Image 1 (cartoon, rainbow, N blue to C red):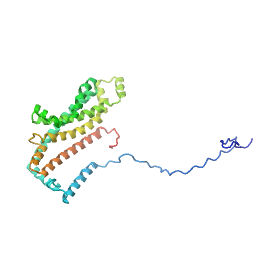
Image 2 (cartoon, one colour):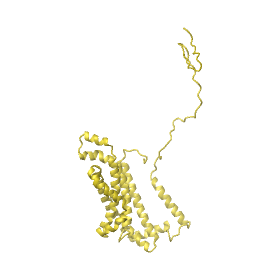
Image 3 (spheres, helix red, strand yellow):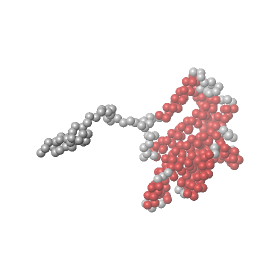
Image 4 (cartoon, rainbow, N blue to C red):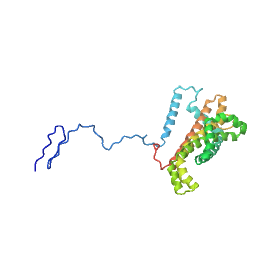
Length: 296
């Protein structure tokens, strides 16, 4: 047996004969140290209980500080103390509760009719080409027309009663519900449709097992926007030819330069809007608990 001899070829790879030891590996330059067990976090982080209240609380604190330090002219913007005192007086006389109940009734009816009509139209347009051709165009046109621009026509048709006010609110809600529900419904993967056809599902089973789970995220997005639209529409209709409601109370206060009463109305709108959005979020988290998203 001969011992190992590397080849004499200069610059070529060393060839080992039988029984030879492998050549030493070339030295490597030391690299940066790698931390073991660490991972960069790219998400928004853990959520805090009642964390969404931090922003409003800071805003109220800044308002209170500016008022106490004299930076705010009370003739232009009343301070929190004056607003609280005015709200107490309105509650004592029952004026605030009566107007709030009327406003909640209008917003609730408009939200109900808007949600039902928007979802029905989205399902009809999403599951049928003829329905899409007939429904989608007019709804897209309505989305481009502000509700305020339709008020003269609606007053001409329905008068200045409650029907007109509820209709204005319902139209804004219906458009939001339709746009989002229809978008998510039509984005369902066609493979699920083919699977349902292969399993010979009925139309009702297809809607319950495929359409509803696929369009439910869009439904909740539309519902959140619809709740906001109901409050925005309520503000509009209650300041035009109204005789009751929070908006009417604010409009009357404007005539007498009562900024504290106006702030009370704005705070009422803000509280109900924030609370209703939080309620929809809670229902959404429970209904879509199977999803893992950045929202947590």
